[in-house]
Amino acid sequence: MPKKLKKWQDSDMEPEINKEMANEFVISITNKQCVEGQIEELTLVTTGSYLERAGKRYIVYREYDQESGRSQTSTLKIDSTRENKMVSLIRHGSGRHTNLILESGKRHLCQYGTPYGDITLGVFTLRVDDQLSSQGGNLRVEYTLDINSNLSSTNSISISVRENLPQESERVNHLENQSQSVS
Image (cartoon, rainbow, N blue to C red; front, side, top):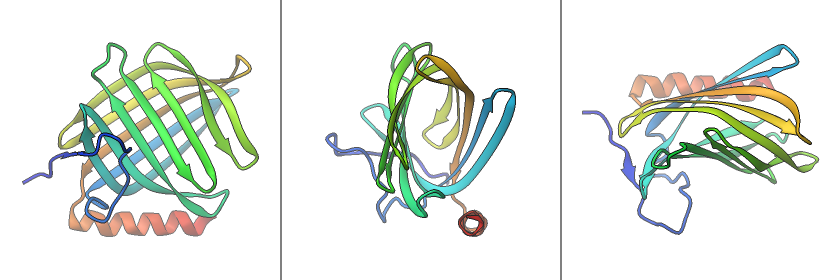
C-alpha cells in the first residue's frame, strides 16, 4: 500500500525533518539556469519528508552545501489554495538563510544567503505547475531572477516526490555519497 502524506500538527512551527519522518520519500530535484545563453543543469536525488499542514504541502530534505562543506535543510512550502499558486523555498544551515517566494504571475523581492552575506533578488514567477497528490507527484516552477531590476537568469526547477522503497534507499544513499565526495 502506498504511503500517504502525513498531516503536520503544530501550526506554530515550520516542518523539520525528524527521525520518525526522515526517509519516507525519494525527492528528485532538477534545477536549470540560463545566464546569457549558457545553460547549467544540476540534479539532486535525496530522501526526505513530504507532509501537509493547514492545506499546504511541505517537501523537506537535507542537502550538501559545497561552498561551506556542511549540510543544510531545505523546505519547499507549496500553497495551491491561492488564486496564484505559490511555492516558498526556505533554506537554512551553513550559517546562511534563504527565503525565495515563487508566486505565479508576480514579482517578489527575496533574501538569498551567500558566503559573503545576504543579497536581495527580484524573483518573477512565470509558472507554477503543481501535480502533487497525497502520495507524491511532480512540481515544476519557472522563474527569472534579477539584481537591481537587471535580468540575471531564467530558471526552472522540477521536483519529483515518490515513495521510498527499500531498493531505492540504497541507490539514493549511493548517489548522496557520490555528490559529497565530488567537492
